Image (cartoon, rainbow, N blue to C red):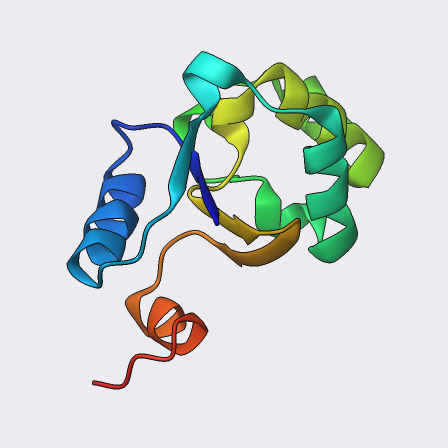
Length: 118
């Protein structure tokens, strides 16, 4: 199981803390250090709509020129942006054996994914 994100992101920290508290081992993939493989990003875009994967409320998106934002209308354009600016990807991305389990962090969703009942 892999968790993709950047270490200083608050949401990624929450997800990592939750996983650690529940003794769930995950491999952490740091976008800043390791980037993102095009095949992986493509796989995510086949499993989830690009609008779920692009964080349009984040600083990276808001910092894009308006005409660049207008060009992001489909998965192909989203893929190019995700590979160029990994920090535009909604974090964290939880994946297992190529299967996208969750984008972002939500305690209830993680509890369902890992079968924890509160």
